[in-house]
Amino acid sequence: MAIHIYNSLTNKKEPFQPIDPDRITMYVCGPTVYNYIHIGNARPAIVFDAVRRYLSYRGYNVYYVSNFTDVDDKIIKAAQEMNEEVPTLANRFIDTYLEDIESLGVEKADLHPRATETVEEMVEFIEQLIAKGFAYESNGDVYYRTKKFKEYGKLSSQSVGDLQMGARIEIGEQKEDPMDFTLWKKAKENEIAWDSPWGEGRPGWHIECSAMVKKYMGDTIDIHAGGQDLKFPHHENEIAQTEALTGKPMAHYWMHNGYININNEKMSKSLGNFVLVHDMIQQHDPEVIRFFMMQAHYRNPINFDNDLLESARAGLERLRSTLENVKHRRSESVNGGSSAGQEAAERAKARFLEEMDDDFNTANAISVLFDLAREANKYMQQPQTSIASLDAIVETMTDMGSVLGVSLEREEVMLDEDIEKLLEERVAARKNKNFARADEIRDQLENDGILLEDTPQGTRWKRK
RNA sequence: GGCGGUAUAGCCAAGUGGUAAGGCACGGGUCUGCAAAACCCUUAUCCCCCGGUUCGAAUCCGGGUACCGCCUCCA
Image (cartoon, rainbow, N blue to C red; front, side, top):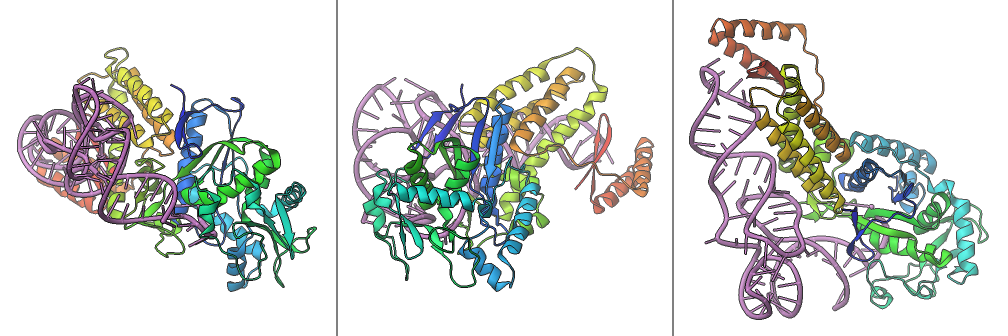
């Protein structure tokens, strides 16, 4: 089966047909950098990172671009409040953004263009829109003439007439129509600004993505992705700008991830009910956070709370523990022998591909991982295990984990000498059937956060 | 008001026509010196409600209810 992607433009799952099979172009709308990101902001970074990893795993060469909006009203406001220059503030939060998503297992994009590096292209873009009659200057501002673009609203399946009810004209704006949106914004005094044919000013939010995609990726790209809340107006406006200019579709597939809720309400900066990634990773293993997200389908909303994370942690722990046991068992295994483990691994891999091909169903992909873990554990109850089978299981589990961006390896932790000694003492005590002492040591180690497991292959330990 | 989404076990969550995945938690059992881990069994005669189509529906159609989101900055 070919990869199928749910396309927000058509509201259907469609077979994925790349423009150039040797180079997939994928653009994900990045953050406006004026603050630390919250976990909701991290969701698109994570889920589309998984999409990217899967496409690569399937043999595609993916050119992945994600922008930074490093100038806009919110940044200017934040910079004023903190008595900082706009670029200084933006740079600072670009750095923290990159750190935060890296900790969540997100690989860097091939390119992270910044709006302020693309102003020249934006100005040209706007000039051409004016020349084509899709934009007009008004008192130093430039607006997009929404009514002129006949397909306006096709992404969010809204008609211009319906949208009009909610549209507003801000004080000081002189739009022909309330639905028109800003392409170029005249600078106020002492504001960061660039020269343009319409005087000093700065670009509107929507034009940057259109200009950057065109500059770095071309007129039409394969996949354009972002959060659900960008569908309207942001992506709708991008389509209007780009397609009015080029006459070609901006992207073949539009993907939108669902929200993260807190107590069933959308997490957002304006509601104030957000959890910063920066804070969250102090309390939770970032891999657990990612694993938790991967257990839901990317288009569905997910609720966030500590109990749910704890449940995800327990599940991930089970997978890690299985993998570690399989590896450990290798030293006591034989060449040849039963290939049951190998067969289980092959079946799992086939199912994994099937699930991921179906619009990146990571929730089902993880269930495959759990099924394989069960089969692996069962297999290991056999008195004799084959090296080839164990290796196949390890490789398959590790690969599937890395496509999801979740490492199933347990961190290597060194034990200090005292603990080593206690372990040795306990082995001796058990040999001599001095179980009282053995249990005493076990309890003591548990207090130090070390859990012991006595297996037929010897005593094992792990961190709590 | 317009547009869109969601409703599946105690909790989380897949599943779009063929008779309910997976995880967490709970209970019983096996294994163990005892544990832990693991495995086995059990846990939704049923998928928000009411009609309809069909040999057959959680899945399709009609109607209703509830919750959420977008229509204004927002991942």
